[in-house]
Image (cartoon, rainbow, N blue to C red; front, side, top):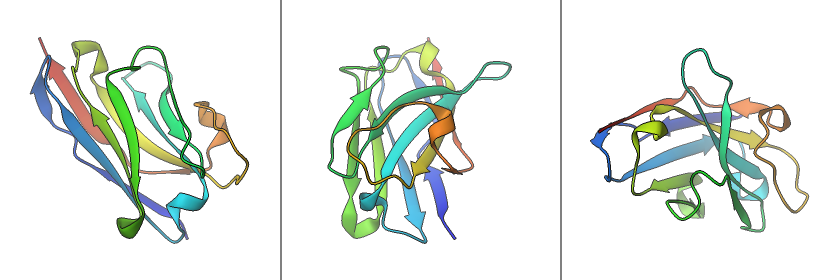
Length: 125
């Protein structure tokens, strides 16, 4: 059974940085598409970034140049490095996995079948 566990969320000031982690068990994360999404209360879950099994990342425009995805195969973990954080980045952040092995990825929630429980990021101005 696939399990995704996020960590690293915290409260920071605008301009600060955080690194979120998504530790996977039950499969090898490097073989599949993985992604980060975020959600604030009363709004739909929003895609942030994704990466395919070949290491090709994709970012939504609002985080390009500020957020970076990486994977550590030895720890079976996906990371999201978030720099220059803004108050509008405040949200619950979720890790998700799509068992597709095809190249490319989409930051569309419906494409991902496995989800973590989330980690809260709060950015104050």
